[in-house]
Structures are given as structure tokens and as C-alpha cells.
Length: 258
Image (cartoon, helix red, strand yellow):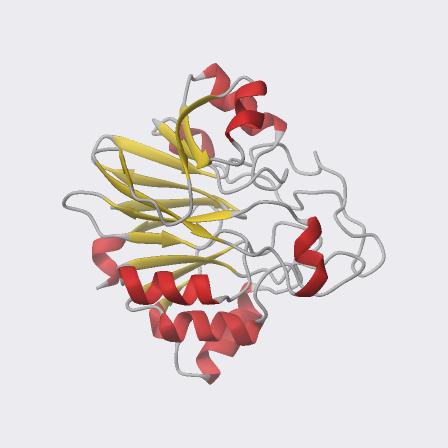
């Protein structure tokens, strides 16, 4: 298994001749409005461009997995890419109707905790809670995913979530070889964070059986947590050896993670 990190929560899982694109935000730098204007500087999003090798990485894509419909996970450019290349999509059953109306081809729609055959293996939807307190109620549906495929490491993608009993259950029940966690600690102008705090990221890493990949960092104006801050927090808890924090455009060979 090879993982190509593009930007924010967008990456490609390469297994054999399959390339699974996760949460395609493919628009140009500044193509989206700011997500906060008072709490943090009102920069347009994404705040960084796609990496120079993104075109080559996207040529590998054969399928797509969408955790939810916020524009930093599926933007207009991402939708256009999927439609132009006739890429089939896997998503939550709650998003199936909307995606079909937008002209996308949904091949599998998942209900929580119900395993379904997919890509020659099996995929399970894991409930995600997009924020602490009342703010989660306005953030809509989000789903994480656990994927098992033949002759490849298993992988759990948390999606945009705080640390919950559902997240802990997925880590304990499936014992994934690799976990991917959203780490930007995003916040709107009001309310508590939309993603895990540093303390809960540490909990997630502690409870992850093996290696962790940190994403959703340094690409959006409402995500203050930096790669440096995350490394420092993990180092203080002697956990950095478990975590890969890729730069945009970086490739991770999972076999090399041990």
C-alpha cells in the first residue's frame, strides 16, 4: 500500500492497480471563501496550492471515497474531476441522494457498522462527530471508514471527528494497521473546535494499535494547529515515532512504517 498525501484531507491510497481518492478538494489556492473571519485571519481557502506532483498522482485514481460534503472535502473542482473521469464513489447512505443529484456515480452507500464488499475487500462505515458540544449539530453528517483489502494493511480513516466512543470502538474492534486522523483543530468564529484538540489527538495516537498518519493541517484558515505544534506535542508524550506527518505531495510506503 502506498499513500500519496495531496493537501488537507485529500489523499490517494494506491493498492495494486487501484487508486482510491479520499475527499477531493482540488480547487486552486483561494478558490473558497474564508471559514472564519474573526477568530483567525480571513484568508481565502485553501490557503496553499496543490503540490506540483498532484496531476501525476491523480492519474492513478480509479475510485473515490467521500467522508462528507463540506467544500474542504469535496469542492467544485473535485466534483468536476470525478465526473469527467467517470470515477465511482463510495459514501455514507445519508449523502447518496445529494451526490447522485450532483451527477456523481455512487457505487456503494454505507450505513454505520455494516460491512460491505468493496474493491475486492471489505469496508465499514464508522460514525463521526464533527465538533465538541452544540457545534456538532450544525456540521451535518460525517462518516469515517475502515477498509480491509487482500494482501494489504488495513486502514481506518477517522474523517472530521472529535474523539468519541465510536472512534475508540473502531480502534479497539478493528485494530487497524494504519489510522488517518484529522488534526487541524478547526474552529469557526463561534463555538468549540470542530476536530480533535491536541489532547484528544494524543489519545487517538495512544490507542491506535500501530502507525498513524496525521492530515487536515496547514491548508485552511480555520485550522490553527501546525505540523510543528503537533510534532512537539507528540514528542512530549514520546509518541512521535508512531506518527507520520506528511508534507503536501509526499508519498508514504506503508510497508516502510513497520
